[in-house]
Length: 256
Image 1 (spheres, one colour):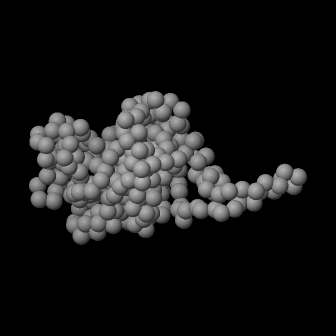
Image 2: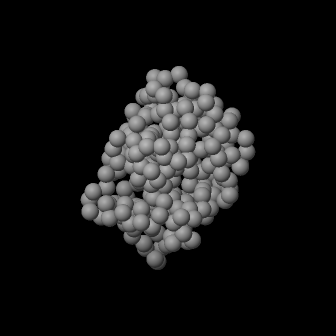
Image 3: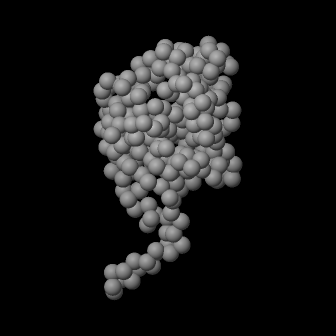
């Protein structure tokens, strides 16, 4: 199974940092947050990734192209122009990085990478700025045991985000304003059938609008409630909080 990660947005709410680097490359503990997300998936046996790059996407390409160099100590023989890698600690990952445009919306990015997916196999899908101790295996198992085309991970409670309304284990509606402190939000970490891409019209399609609402309306969207840790990195305050957790040895999303 593959995991698709959205990594192309402008990250304007974190402008203090994203003026120089794309948001998924903002570091937590000297590693970009996208690396942390990929480690979460890899801890559940998912090692194939498709990254939907856009804004400053060349920096993501350069990071993974030089990943071996980033992880190892090196010995350079200047006279012979020879480089030896020492104590390398690389990952067993296959990473496809696709330029999906600087201003493409979230749904449009997913549509652009359709050809890199297996047409008859579900895939995982998430944002490049949210981390948590998500039980990826449980989300896949629940998706496979239900006759639906999409699953999202929900999280509760908060009044900071748009909410999802549920009936049984189905998502039936999305609302922008919180109705109660116990309502759930969409935390990302989807499991999807490739069929959902048929609901995306073009680059201007926002995944969280028509496609998700249509899946909910047709009762093709279920949820997996996550009760552990989850947090997005939307602002500098979020970044600093996550950094402190990492430095204090209290990174609750570190499940590897």
